[in-house]
Image (cartoon, rainbow, N blue to C red; front, side):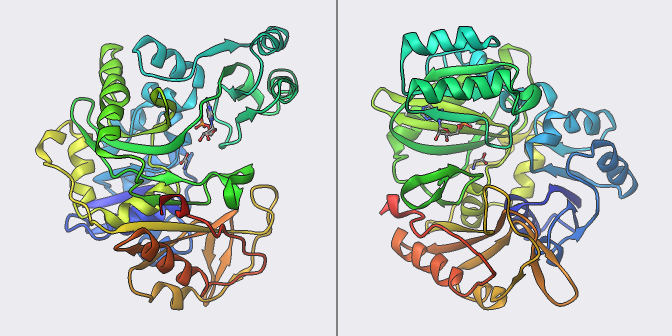
Length: 422
Ligand code: AMP
Ligand code: GLY
């Protein structure tokens, strides 16, 4: 099979790495890919959101299966276009992608289908939002409706902070149209967990649980990022918790989509807060998580291509249960100086060979490019270094021993990834 992966980050490197191991895969492309990906797939210079460019390429190259990494292409309707052209593609269509592309849509959907989530109200008028915040008090959470590259959520400790966030979104339009509507919702407390499932809109196969580390600094301090590390499984997601999450969040969502006439095939990612009142959905993503994927896929034993083909053909019931490596996987993200703000690029990366040759370690590239004889940094998140171990401590040690072999100017990483799981 000729397979195309769309995207260029650590998540896509993990997808390419796993797909390359499938007995079904005979030729693998990635658009646009990165330095690490170029070692195992042919990278083609088409942007991940250039839907017509990707379609033209897939037609010309007779691609049998396309796998979409990032949300942008999904929300632009890449799945609708490929399906119309008779090409197989793994991911939800444009309507379904609204679960991530519009928080107003997602929250309204959750309310309608009784998916537990924080109480909320939708606003497009700053004065009305300010008044609501004054009446309700802090802490509260302000969310831009549309896609804002992971920056559209403010957890406000004071009413002042909340009102400032409202003004910047609704009045100053810092996120442009993505912030022309906002959600103001109750602040929830508890442990966070990411539950990803694969579905063909009827059958559901849950992936192993994972936990992300969103803040830039140790002990969850500093600005929110795309994710500074992850581990799988998450011990907070016990069997009983997982059952509740599946019953109250995942199945209600899949059933709700079907009732609303929305066909969903692909990955559904639920960001969940485990509160004293039970699990509550914080958000949906309509794709694999980054960096959760770099901690989940190294543990997956089942052939991922078989699963994605089955899901995109409505035949997921043919796949039995997914098989997992019992070991724990910890992924530590190495980021460029300045990230998540303005960051430096073009730094030479040293020690990649030594790190990736360590046993039970995989080094995923996120923002790198390859020149004739070296790798240079080319993004905010540069690498995701994953280590597998029989215990959480062993996986932590494997990952950090590998990280210590790697060097580039200004490299920053959190020292406490997965410590919560100990
Ligand atoms: P989201 O993009 O909706 O997942 O929000 C990003 C992050 O903000 C989440 O991972 C949480 O850490 C935090 N967050 C979002 N909504 C809430 C909430 N209602 N209460 C507390 N924290 C939240
Ligand atoms: N790790 C969070 C995300 O992929 O959105």
